[in-house]
Length: 143
Image (cartoon, rainbow, N blue to C red; front, top):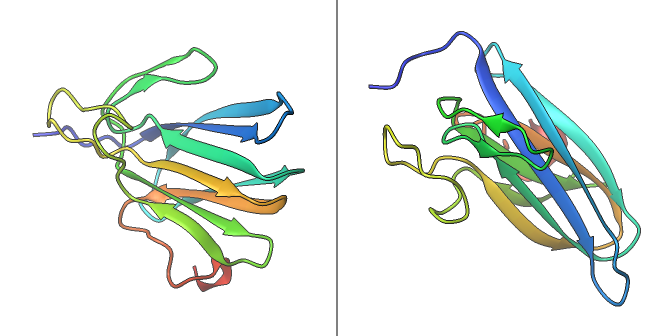
């Protein structure tokens, strides 16, 4: 049985790689804690060209983030969603597949989230929440 923690930890890595002849990429890592199950964290990002955006969490099963920090397993089961500048949902994921995300050594589950999506140039919002808090409808304003 998994131990319940008051502080629920998450690590998130987002990588944007531009298509075409441009050898440009950027990434960021986020680590933090949620103290309630309805908390969300929003990340705003912009793309100057069509790019593949990959977002992966290291919460449930742990791992090593883009910054090289080791993240312990035992965090919460995360959910990721990406919305465009109009607020329309363009991608959402509760659980990546084993191989895309880590496998928890206690439960054997692969409950971290993984999105890899080609996105056009523009402004986007990436939302991180817990698995019970999926997007409510197809827009950011829907909750």
